[in-house]
Figure 1 (cartoon, helix red, strand yellow):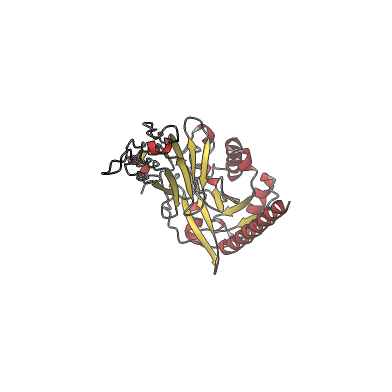
Figure 2: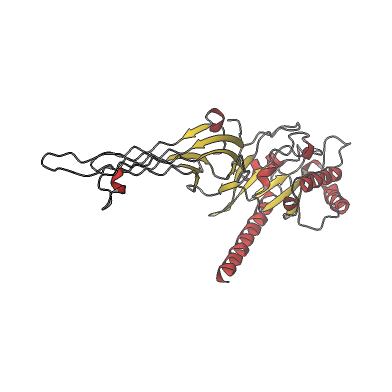
Amino acid sequence: MKFFDEATINVTAGNGGSGCLSFRREKFIPDGGPDGGDGGDGGSVYLVADEGLNTLIDFRYKRIYKAKNGQPGMGKQRTGGKGEDLMIRVPVGTLVHEVDSGELMGDLKQHGEQLLVAHGGYHGLGNTRFKSSTNRAPRKTTTGSEGEQHNLKLELQVLADVGLLGYPNAGKSTLIRTVSAARPKVANYPFTTLQPNLGVVSVDAHRSFVMADIPGLIKGAAQGAGLGIRFLKHLNRTRLLLHMIDVAPLDESVDPVVDARDIVAELEEYSPELSARERWLVLNKLDLLPEEEQKARCQQICQDLDWQGPVFEISAISGMGCKALSQRIMQHIEATAEAEAEQARQEAAN
């Protein structure tokens, strides 16, 4: 299935039902008085996060959504039925923007979470509501109000704990295949990956994290080169970035250090906040180097990059170093989550 991560839709809530103008008419009961009931409220429109969905492709074919109108009121003080709410399923991780104002209406992060995007119209009042001691036969009613209408931009940002950065053919997809059950396409040509790939990495029982392979970042991506920055937004939710470097490129003219600097520059141009996120260096494809050259090559790359952070030396295709990398990532995620929970407790206490 083709990956769609943006869509624009129109949602309209139902109109409220009008109030009823009616008078009681029964034998032997003169001057029965007003008995018109209220109308029903219009149905509202909700977006519902569903973990069973992973793309917005359904909204490519249907863009207009409307909830049911409320029913008019009836005689004998009977209230009209409420319009049925419309529940629209979207993937977990969907951001919802109002197109005209640009306002962020909500962020659906958890399965089953609901977001009201268009409120149904309110019911009209029947003439019974206007009865008084001075007006015993009112002929006044009100119509129901119109439901809200909005143009919405839906933007999917995949929910991953770890995001992979790197030039095409750095081995990002191979790493996901090695450490998880995901099976992204792998080939020896650039831009093999054309859409984000997610893999659940299970470290041991009840301990796992989600890793995302984001395609298409090369020099000039911020200006639209390659696949541009279309998929970089999917890194916004990650706790940790892994910057993968091919230490043994087949093209001898390619300098891994220059490529690494280009990636960092594009990341900074796209989002200073994202570029400031914790990032680890992963030196991949060590199996392509003679064993006696591996350490020296890795040390030279770190020295040229003036790298001070964590470094991992792996071979994604053989699995060398991948288990240790996964365990360190799991420890980091758990420590980060614990720190965030403690901070939330302290803020709540204050």
